Amino acid sequence: MQDTLGPLSLGLVGALTLTLALLDPTYAQVGSTFQPWVQTLGQPVAAPTGVEGKALPLHVDFATSPGSAADRKLWETQMRTVLDYLRQAPVFAQPRGFYPEFQAFGALHALPPFIGKQANAPFVGGTQVYLWRPGDVTLQPDGIPKRKSGAETGALRVEFNYQYLSSPWMEDDTGEMGVLDYRGEFQGFPIINDALLITRDGRLPYRPVSQDRVLKAWLKRNGREVEKIKNEMAEAKAAYERFVSPAETSKRLAEIDKKVAAKDPSNQATTRRYEEMWERKDGEALLAKAQPDIEHDKAFATYRTVLQVQKQLDAMGADARKAPAWIDASLNRTSELRLMPEGQGAAVVEVDPDFFDPKKPRTQLRFAWVRKVADMQEGARAYDPAKPEDSVRSRAMLTALQQVNWREFADRFLQPR
Picture (spheres, rainbow, N blue to C red):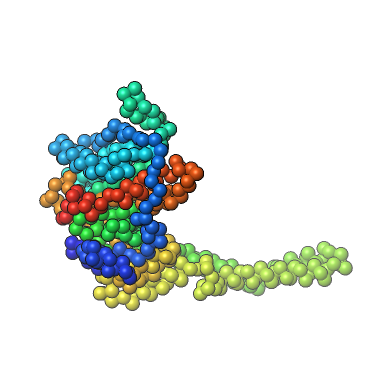
């Protein structure tokens, strides 16, 4: 496997292709589901206003005994340095309308491919800046703010080394696979789902999944639907054949004769007409179930797709089976599947087990996520001048996102493999 994602080369579609290629040609293309909201991500928002806030005491938290004491100390030092860097953002240096609380945390990577391999697991963790409303804190006699019990707020969260699929799509005997939902880019870095992904060398923590694996996994998961439908059609056919059998037909006609005979002679003709009509409709309903419109009925959409996918897989040559899988991300991924030409749609990937170099320190910072970018964008754009306090936290977080130079951040804190 190449150091970059190879076929996932980040030559993004249209103008984005050129833009990101110029910014960092080592990036891998991660899809084409560009979201319009990303276009306004860099536009200034109303500055947070209100009382001048003070920072709450710094809090550092680590999971139970992660790594050696030396590793923990080095990680804590790195996180404190990151927080010092984030504090320099003007919106945090002189907070208005909120009280910031800076936190750092760390643990060992406990997800695949490091389950049961803690001795080789890298450190994960990060920093977060909570933004408390003035009403969420009390000022102690010494002037230091303290958060009130039960108060809740949002945070600007920067995570390091968390190598996992935020939204696993399928799995097979090899492991989980997911879809890189590319939303756009900010300061030259891709936004995946709702998070900004920052790297130093452009290598993403994933690797492509082959078309062969994707098709087989999808067929295995949805094959049960086909078997279910086949069984239902077989049962319906058997029910219809019983219905039209001479014995069952004679029995029903006898029942109709019995019902008609019990009626007043003046109502017998009408009764027979209705009884025969319902008997005919019952037969038509059973026939419809036994001979459904598989080609057009929405109920058979998954069934049709399974047959198409199986046909496609059977016709694939060896090279096509090995090729990276790209899918139409606009479809319902549970019941629909359409492979796309390489570089179109969204890439199917898995966690790259070779992403972290075991010869490098386990505290090395390889990449970072800035979480919930979409949420802070949505909250900040909902600014109401009549109620400025309602969106002050989102505006502050979005302003911080804009004020931090993430390329400089990557060069300063992140390391190549």
